[in-house]
Length: 276
Image 1: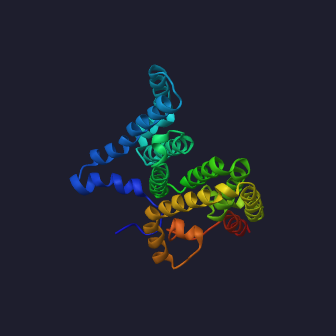
Image 2: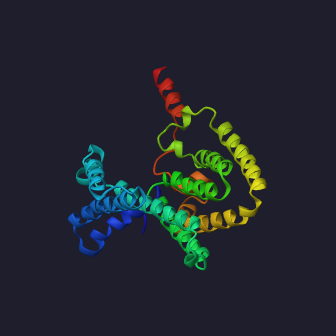
Image 3: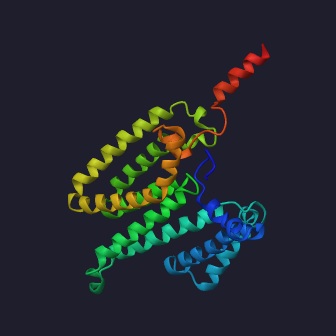
């Protein structure tokens, strides 16, 4: 079965195929390395097709990227999930650019299938984003980024700003800042969280009033993306609920704590007691 507690680990399960199918450590490590190769391919698509870089300049950019110490370290020493996550995230960006291109296309031949194509791309973006969320919870930033792009494409700047506010609210709600231990330093975290929610709702309502004709399409696309985003992540939410019997957002995302619950305040309190 799956390990009790811990964050979701989709890419780690993918890497585990090296052990499950062939019982080879080398293959398991190679599956991690594959993420870096696929990342180069995705970056080339962005550089050549969307940024319109000449092929030689595109390859130079890929070379500079891959020889940076961080990427090299991930490629041959750590061999963790980060390059796999980067590849999936880049594919979501490529799909979003395709979605945006089709949305703005005036090609008469594409008009008949335009809506169907947009929905297919949106669904695929959601599935890949949900899979990436199961690799690292920081994909929440990508999720809100894609939503902001969708609302900006349909509704304009105010909707984009509203999604920015919702992203801050979402990050604080699920306590992503707690992963780095910085939550204790954010003394006004709860105030900022609710302020961002109120501001986001206000900006969203203002944008909706000014762009009523596009509101239905915007909401429809948002719901489809969010629904397909949730599908790959539901097994992890179910596992975490069964372990904890809690509906707390942070607990649902991170599962049962593998150690005792402790905070910086508790550490300081224990230290003060020790000194007496």
